[in-house]
Image 1 (cartoon, rainbow, N blue to C red):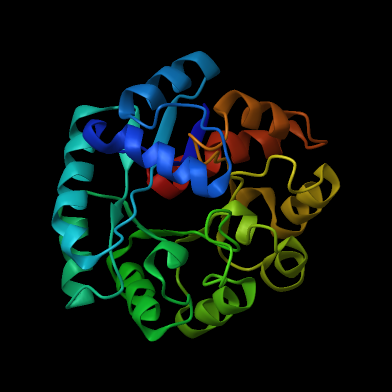
Image 2 (cartoon, rainbow, N blue to C red; image 1 turned 45 degrees about the horizontal axis):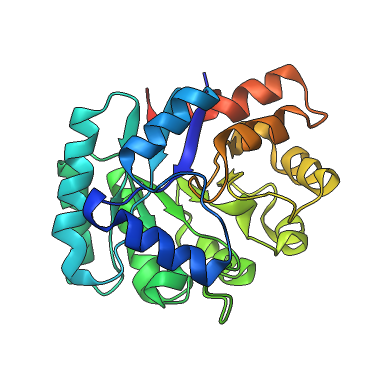
Amino acid sequence: MVIDFHTHTFPDRIARASIESLSKCSGITPHTDGTVAGLEESMKEDGVDLSVILPVVTKPSQFETVNRVAAKLCEEKEHLISFGGIHPDCPDIRKKVREIKSLGLRGIKIHPAYQEVYMDDIRYLRILEAATEEGLIISVHAGVDIGLPEPVYASVERIDRAIRETAPRKLVLAHLGGWKEWDAVEELLAGEDVYLDTAFMEEYISDEQLVRIIRKHGAERILFGTDCPWSGQRESIERIRNLPLAGQELELIFGGNAEKLLEL
């Protein structure tokens, strides 16, 4: 089973404009049109059995709409799981986290660069603590954002401090723990009790360093992810399959770890 733990979609009415805007600021050509249907087509063509969609709440007023849409999507699509979203400036964080859980959503996405808050800010620490109390997964953009490179709101050092302050039980660090900060990941995060996903690796990291981090961290805490539509699902699958990893390691990365974490 192949589970893509890191994908994005947009409502049909804004998908085209959103994709064009993000593509322009990042310089990336998307692999789908950004819609749910586009993701489903990619999954069918590229052999992905289930995808996790990670919505981003860019302002507190979006909280209700984003999470309502996420819950509806989970009800309608057996092969798609959407996390909820939260903004660090939302009032009564613990109540909001409980609301997300009450909708049946398995996790929460936060994105420090889009939300313009540093990862070790007390507002994020409260979200990590509340999610841990409720047994929810937290997925966080980690490292540099290609479209918003400065400042680095989710640097490896800040992530490391947040982990030590809150000891989250189900934290997923996207982009192998810190996009384009992989030397720091090897030094500070590899081996910690967190999950790393493999989203948007492309040519930005060598196979040698990718394998070193996987082996140091442990394949049992690596989740296959693509960042679709910004990486192709087929290309990402081939990249991981061509690494010098054992069959059991690949099984865990492609689906076994995600099945356990998602309690499927």
